[in-house]
Amino acid sequence: MPVLAIDQGTSATKAVVVDGERILATAEAPVTVDASADGAVELDPEALWSSVVAAGRRALDEAGSPAIDAIGTCTES
Image 1: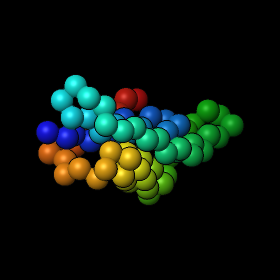
Image 2 (image 1 turned 30 degrees about the vertical axis):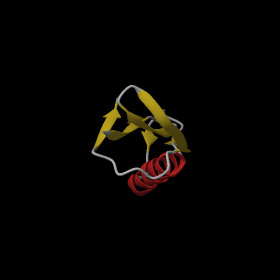
Image 3 (image 1 turned 90 degrees about the vertical axis):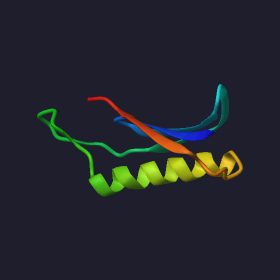
Image 4 (image 1 turned 180 degrees about the vertical axis):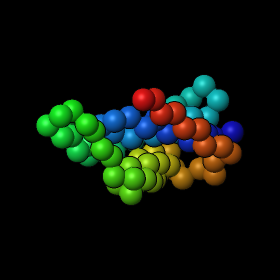
């Protein structure tokens, strides 16, 4: 049962393809953060989504493009 796990961080999106207890592949795509002088941080939603798609595709390609049964996501603020 292959699963694609996405970890959305502030500076990068990480993707892992797992099958049971085996890690089949990992990938990472950078995320650009815009910070203002007063410390406010902004992320472009389209750039964020693009990083999710890029990391996910790379991990799936590296894993041999298995048919996945589920996708899990993790974000933390």
